[in-house]
Image 1: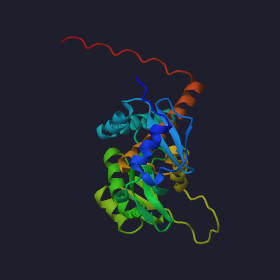
Image 2 (image 1 turned 60 degrees about the horizontal axis):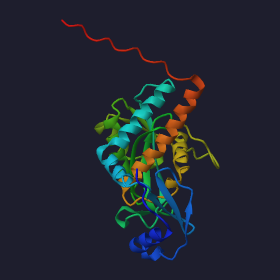
Image 3 (image 1 turned 135 degrees about the horizontal axis):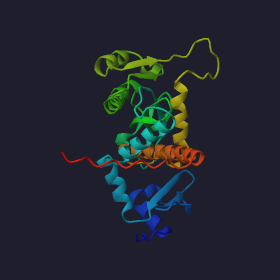
Image 4 (image 1 turned 180 degrees about the vertical axis):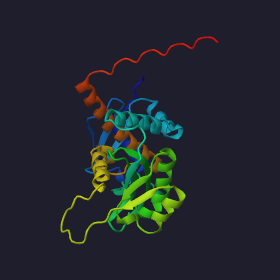
Amino acid sequence: MERAGIDEGFVRDLVRDQHPELADLEIRPVPSGWDNQLWRLGDELAVRLPMTERAPALFTRWPKQGLIGEFHDRLRAATRQAQGRDAEPTAGVIDSQSAKGTSTVEAATSGYDGGKKIKGRKRHIVVDTLGLILAVLVTPASTGDRDAAQNLLSRAASRHHRLRRVWADSGYTGMLVGWCAMALNLILSVIRRSDGHIGFVVLPKRWIVERTFAWLTRSRRLARDYERLPASSEAMILWSMTMVMTRRLGRRRRRTGPAPARAPIPAQRAA
């Protein structure tokens, strides 16, 4: 593929055109991937540009066509089966994480989380008992957990018909429990922290989704929310999980060797 000509002058002009308030920040190149170039903008921001002409079109087209979600779901099924689980889960865990937004985030899709003191967006996810994502939703940080949970759990239940129980923290109490039972035929179990505990305590099931958030934030692109659209943020979360799953499957393949070849399907005999 033909490489796009990108240098410091091009990046400077691009920043000056789209974000004049950032035009005076220092720009320096950093190690990049095979299909993108990364430039550090000041101490906290970054500019990522594709090195091929087709890259932006593919990234825009794939989420709209559902290809990223389908690729992620197939990997999740393979990962579950490799660990001796059924491809479709019956239980999950729900939680949210507030992430700081950069200047590239649209104001209409950003908000302020008063509890966490964070301005940006909030990532809501449902994971299975292995920590693999079943559904994801990105909203302004001001969105309450219960408000986003209805949409998120509806997505999870429609895509995973065997899902019957979801564990949550005390932020999902109230009428949401009854709504899940009536509308989704789903048991929402709230795991509360005991008042007698002091300091950090590992709570049953809830640590699973917290571990998934730790996996996600290891991706530099998810350290903050850099995406202009919430749909792009959701796509980046799924891409990050595909890296987690492919590495897990790769390690298993190295330990057990290649999978045996499948026997060919015999042709049907003519009646």
